[in-house]
Image (cartoon, rainbow, N blue to C red; front, side, top):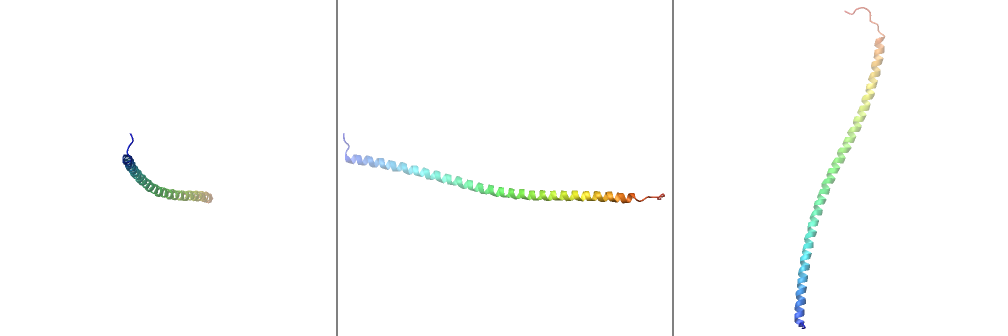
Length: 107
């Protein structure tokens, strides 16, 4: 049995409306997911900025520790040199004092 032209038009229109409605709902879900992903990306960006600040602070601290270590090494070298010089002077002084002879009793 053949459908009337009017029945076919009503059926096709109904199917078209159902398709458009389904497409609209799908688009709304897609937009919602895009918004959710955008929020996640924004949170990741904030975290990356915080990490960058932390890494910069760590880098500065390490550089400061390196400078302090180098200064300490220089001070150790200076102390060793001064110690060696004092040792030499003490030996020289001992030689000079050794040349004196004490006689008699000191009372």
